[in-house]
Each structure stands twice: as structure tokens, then as C-alpha cells.
Length: 400
Image 1 (tube, rainbow, N blue to C red):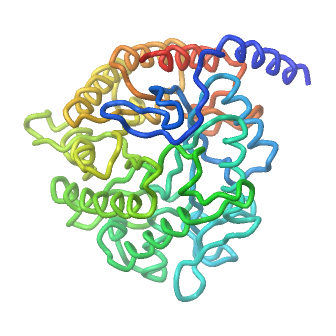
Image 2: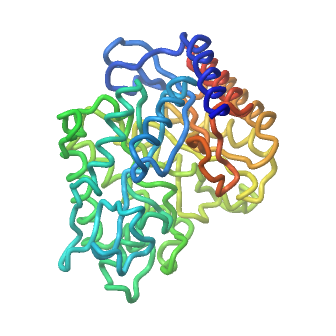
């Protein structure tokens, strides 16, 4: 109880300190290389965060997370908008039902939608509570990784548990149609709490096609010989072009981004065969940015996971700023994380993003009090890291 009191007091103090962080009233739109609030015509930059579990946790945890995000000035939260399973009882799932919650399942003949209280009504709540706390959400529509089902669950639906490749998700016409059906269902869904269609919800900052899409996944499905280096980049870029245009055809109100990690696709000899730049993952982030149906570039930053140094991150941050200038669009570092010396390293990184005039960043990740730190990246408010990031969010938001 004493810790909760202390956290509350700190949050109140930050509410006072961060009063200069602009409230968000309307849809956020792209205006050249920047974002603008359509209701106020004011420029919009943000320091935000991520959270992957809000859509299956109790209401009090949702309120707690958004309450802290709002109090500390993290006015954009990136969330998962998917939970794909096998059958409705959880059998034949790549990952599985989450505390009784799932959104998308196999009904015996095709993928179907769970619109009830243990389904998409949970996402309704997330969006409604974000609006109540004056926070925007970036909603991600599927996952490259096996967690929460994602692409590999589509492949399993298609192949009945036998055969197939991870990258079939991008090339198989039936699977692409299933993904489009999911997108259409979500965008045209009416929120039971707000009464608005998702495509008319101003609390949604943007849609993202997929979290960290690559030729390679992490589940039981390998990569085909077709999805490799430049050929893989061509496959994934075609998919991004098709699906981003499809989202735009349904929803003219919201921005669309890819949700990729920001990898490059250059000749291996010219980049020293650096796997983050030589097209190994089949991801051409600069190419995505050139598509008219993509509103802003995204990048992620995990040096330790990528066998890179902390100092390497400075060049990564600069590179993506340069790419944004090349295509004339905003750039967001929408995930970044380190498991040690967070205050000093996050100061270095967020200063670099400030100096490069990033349009936004979102650290991985803000958690509710006492949530287990499974991956070492979790940050709860009241911590030194949270206070540092709050100050840096305020600083970035104040840029014109």
C-alpha cells in the first residue's frame, strides 16, 4: 500500500510538471514530414510506450496502465490488436488462448471472429479507456512471431497443422484474403463502449500491418527458398503495398504504418554484410516508406538482441532520420529496449532522437505495478527510468 501511495504522489507531481504536454483532440494526420492534430491544427510529436497484454487483462489493469501513461506524459501507447488461435477451445493453436481471451479462431471451415466479452470487446475497452485518459493507441493487426498466434496461425489454418512455410502468409492468396477479412472486420467494428466504428475512433493514432514482419518467423514453420534477401524483400514489399492500400480503402481517417524493425535492403558488399542492412530479413524499410499508402517510417532498437553495441545505436538512429528525409515522411522509433543501465542509455538514445527531430518514440515497455519483468525491459512508473523517459517525452513533445 505504501508503494502505491508513493507512486500516486509521484504521478500527481508529474501531472503538474507535464502540463505542457499537449492534449490530443482529433485524428492525427501526416503533414509532410510531421504529424498534426486535425482538430487543433497543432503539430504533434510524442514520447510513448508499448504494452502487449492490455487486451486480455482486467479493466483495473487497463485503467492503471493508461492512468500512469497519461500522468507521465506518454500520450501514445502501442498495443496488440490480435489474438489468433486454432479452434475455439484452444486446440491446434500456435500459441493459445490468453486468460480465456481470443479474437480470431478456426470455425471448422474458415477463420471466424470472437466479438463477445472474451473477445473483441476487450479491445473495445482498451480503446475506450485510452480515450478516457486522453491517450492515443497504435493498434497492431498481427504478429510475425508465434506469440498470440499471428502469421503462423494463419499458415496452420491453411495447412491443417501439416506443411507450409512462414512466408506463405505473404504469398498464399487464401491467407491474404483471410487477413483482409480480419482487417475489414476490425476496422468496421462498432465499439460497445463508445458507439463508434473503429475507423471513426479518434483515440486510434494509426494502424500497423504487422509487428516486426520478416521472411523468418519463430515457430514451427521455416522460410521457403523464395523468401530470401532481395527476392524476399520484393515479396514482403508487395504484401505491404497491397495491405496498406486495402486498409486505406476502408479507413480514410487513420494513418497506416508497417510496424517493421527498420532493416535495410542494400548490396551486401556495400554494407559489410551487416544483417540489419543487407536484406537478410527480406525487409526494405526505406522501400516501405516510398509507398504512397504508408504514412510514416518505423524502426526498433535492440542492440543486445541483435549482437550490436550500445554505441552502434547512434548510427541506427541517424540512418532512419536520413531515410525519413529521403522519402519526406515522419519517423517513429516505436520500440527500443535495453536490460541494464537504462537511465544512462535511454538518456543517450532519446537525446539522439531529439537532436534528429524524430516525430515520436515508444519504449518497450510500460507495465502496471508488480507485473513480472519477463524480458528485463519492463518499466513501472515511480522508477528512475520512468521519470527520465517522462522528462524526455515532454522535451520531444515541445519541439515544433
